[in-house]
Amino acid sequence: MDVEPQQSVDQKIGQTEYIDSGAKFLEQAGDYAPLSPEAEKRLIRKVDWIMIPMLFITATFGAVDKVALGTAAIYGLQKDAHLHGQQYSWLGSILSLGALSGMFPSSYLIHRLPSAKYLCCCSLGWSTMALLMPACKSWSALMAVRFFMGCFEAIIVPGISLIIASFYKKSEQPPRNALVFAAASSIINGFLSWAVGHIHSALAIWQYLFLIIGSITFAWSIFVFFFMPATPLEAFFLTKEEKYHMVRRVADNKTGIENKSWKWDQVKEAVVDPKTWLLFFFNIAINIPNGGLTTFNGIIISNLGFSSVNASLLSMPTGVMSTLSAFIFSYIGAKWANRRCLVTIGACIVPIIGTVIVYTVDRKNIAGQMVGIYLLYTYFGPYVIGIGLGQANTAGHTKKTVTFAILYIGYAVGNLIGPQTFRASQAPAYTGGVVAMIVCYCVCIGLISLYWAFCVFKNKKRGGVYSHARNNEEAIQELLDETDFQQERFLYTT
Image (tube, rainbow, N blue to C red; front, side):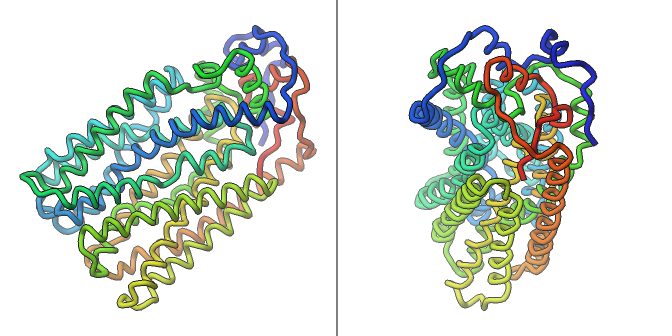
């Protein structure tokens, strides 16, 4: 149901808590001549060349330590820490328990504090945990460190999603999501794992892996703390006129840029919004395979008969496949107007094919097995499109923050369950994990179909006509901190 605004637009414009930071800027900035199409493209390229690498590297380093656990396993972590039974599986799951514990405190803090600075402080936290991993000699110590690592990492995806939504139009967000959240962590981890595999010294190879990852991430976190902006208004590389044009462009999203007032009515709306929970359960289902594959990928490849060093190298293309899947399907979803849900459904079919190949092809057929394993990682495409749907269809800064937190909890729950579907007693076939993956992809198709139907229904009720702000006054009205329920002219991306 729609929530009717309790006050008129004029009343809200006069109240600080309803004014988005972008609206305040437009009120004071005056008016500039519209950009030509060529000048607008140059401006977006300028933003892309600075923001996308910063966000990409931050997101990638935040994910490297996750996939590093699978590599550490084939380099002796389980033996050195005396792990047995399902203890290794729990090392994969505990990260998500930490994320569940840290998500809501982080969501409130990133809303109230300078968001980019808070994100970078969390990056310092999770890199510190990576540096502590080599000092752990038991299961309990590893569990404690990875729990706190999960607490710090909880804000990565929600925080970066907020930043992307504040810089780009709805149609521009999907390919940027694909680039920023590209699964390059597997490529970096594979290369580092191969490199440290040739080290011979007192420390174990897996210890070197975490020391290198933690050190690099720590140094990068300090750099971005000083230079990463959360919104166009904070961008050191933009002139006042360029900031004006960036804000005017984003105003058409009707989702706002930033507002530091915490609104409990928007929290309630995020919780009762059916879209939130459809994407929440979609995130659980799409990430159950991710949780299992992240934790067991190295072991699965090693079980095909490869050495530890070669298994590390062969895990690198999984990142390439995830990245290509995310970019290709996001690009199609962005260019094919209002067909993102249909693209997501098609994208879910590809990993189903990969799962069937891995389970049915003879394990002696190494080439066939590797093709199936690489196809499994195309699951990342529908996940990234889901992030884009949440960005495009959620307005109101508090509602966005809470919604992104709930969606990330879905991600964490999926990654918590995933490793438990791979039972050590079922190696090397891991029948439980295979069945779980196929069921989850089918559930994803059903949930995104319901999401599609709900958004189409809501758009028809609102007349289905999209409007653009023609002047500063209209742009300021679009930047009121109102939710998508409260805005009568808000149309949902399908």
